Amino acid sequence: MSQLRTFQAILWRDVFVTGRELPSFLAQVIIQPFFILFIFAKVLGDIGYVQHDFAQVLLPGIIAMNGFLGALQNTTLPLVLDFSWTREIEDRLLAPISIPLVAVEKIVFGAIRGFVAAVLMVPVGFVMLDVSWPWEGIPGALVVIILGCLAGGSVGMVIGTSVPARRVNVMFAVILTPLLFTGSSQFPWRSLSDDLLWFKVICALNPLTYVSEGMRANLVPNVPHIPLPIVLLVLVVAIAGFGGLGLRGFMKRALD
Image 1: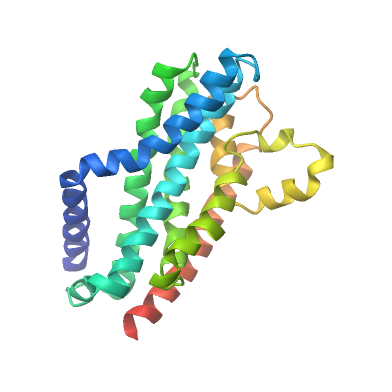
Image 2 (image 1 turned 30 degrees about the vertical axis):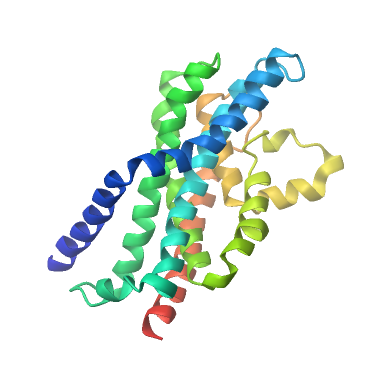
């Protein structure tokens, strides 16, 4: 019970610090997806280069992207800083809490920030674009985005305990950019033709694809999508698999 209270205290401290850094956090999670929505859905739609219903397809994908990648980055970067420069992680390891729970707290906190980043895109998208969602799909979409943020945090734990600080800039180019463009956030995965089979396979290996497809399955069910049970299964497996790898990496770094 004392470990649970310590876990809650550490988590609350991180949430409190986020509140104090709110302007920089909002800029971090809103600017890039805002311009993706504005250019690809609003501008290209108004000049006729994309169909007007493309906004219906794009917005759920951008929300998924913001949640997953937001959780990933907000787990990875603090870990890299903690282990390499600030050494703040040492104070947490000395707290009355087991080492694996320290790692779990990092994943959960990254997921919370990712979830906030995802939710923030909803009013932005509705103000900018002409979209509508069925009310009955919103609970399912919330489940998908929560699992997606936990999956993103788990992937972030693997990256954050594997990438040395001097390679952080390379990480963004080599890891985050491919994740961004193969996560089916800008297009439905099921709509990819057989001529792009190699790309379809690559996208299927990206956990973000299942977050994007799960959001569309709930919010725009008329668009071709991966069946929701498969989406939920893959996300749970991703959380367990990447979470387990991340915990192993965290234990190794913490005990070095």
